[in-house]
Length: 254
Ligand SMILES: [Zn+2]
Image: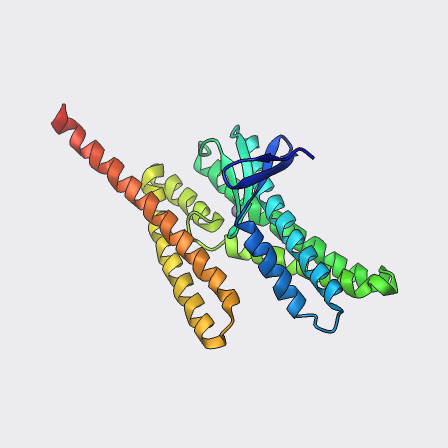
């Protein structure tokens, strides 16, 4: 395995020619998932419970990479290359070298990720069914826990990414629909970004309320994600307004 280092990102190698990297912030998620899973299995001896937690964190990493690879391979079908995939604290990013050229391509590239996650969740369900029957007695519990984690993690990845919160996948599908209707990609991006910002505010508010009600800091992760969506939406919105202002000023300057 060839490992190269980018800006705070360790590149582990290539899959289908696409560089796969892990950002340093993912280590926080790795530690967090390991501790969360381990704390749910206090009946196991500490080495076994932390090993299980670490395995679940790695399963989540592989699941996120598979989700992003699905985006990248769908983009490739429409002639768009992907420079790299990075996994960080809040999920994964496929760095497409350009935007898909049509609303249809944009929507299909966006839907490919959740479709892959849903497919892996189904595989996890099959693992749950078969693991209970065929796994050796000593490995049955660990097999079932891992299969349950694969199912839940990927179902959550599919469902959460389908929220209409641009730049998440559901928001990109929404943008493609508006783009198709208005034939104006910039305007569609600005509308999707505004809706995304509203979703971001709701996610932050819900996360803070749930944190306060349950005293479970795990929901703080959702507040971070909501802030990320809010910030991304704000930057797209601002870029749209700036481009429109420049265009409006051009005739006067000529
Ligand atoms: Zn996605």
